[in-house]
Length: 360
View (cartoon, rainbow, N blue to C red):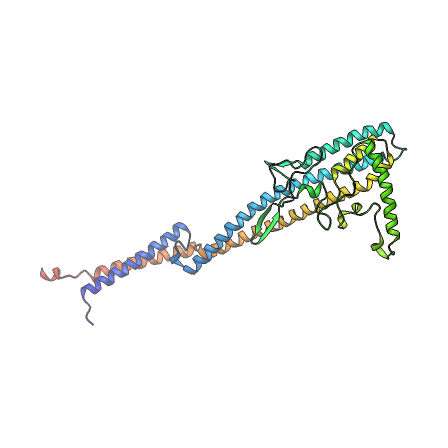
């Protein structure tokens, strides 16, 4: 085979180009500390790195969502804790004024003033705001959920945030569930069979109606065959006296506190005694809501830990795929540099003779 000067020249150019290209790639790796700087360097590894980065950015956004929900839930838990404390205080006052040994008309009037302050504090807790949003208003975060009479102006919406793929958690709890007891019965609505008395005259009328209702309940119970075990146990006063922890109906906290205040002002110890069971139910209702908030906080904390671990795992995977080995890169640079120098020396000797050398 005849080797022409042009073939030798092309071979020299090809070798020099390859050596300089390898040296450029190695210098780029040494400067960026990345083995993959463009998809053509390693298409399969590049696809896996891009997938890992996409998942990492998604997890970072999920963590931001979780932090927002966590702050909302923790503030709700703090508010519910304060609400539980003032209800416990109201029960202590009711117990102290439920008999003539520790209470009289004067002490009950003074205690009624404190119960009124507890009522006002309960309304303030119901209207708590975090930033510019009301905590217990449902979707209507720009509207105060309760007025001074305890009427609810929010809704029962749950503001859900995405914490993982196809996973959502509610960051709030509606005020009508906590303060009004709605959503704790089978149909989700509490239907009281009487109005809470607001003055002395309505309290006396309520007492007469209550005696009649109790007699009707006793007549109804006598028509049923007794059964053994807890199935035969019934609380006095009908379905509205059931404990929400066991699946019964809830109570209106504002009506309960207002009824206790009216009973104290009317100096009626029997009415005060009747509010004790309702206060127990109200405390259980708040504890139930607080436990629900606590379970959500625990869930978002566990999710946050999982996402943090996933971010670290994605960074590790991407680093293993795209990061360059510094020792290997330096070794390859020295080897390629020696190869380039050897190519230049041999090429210079190979193409040094020319036609002009023979014309001299």
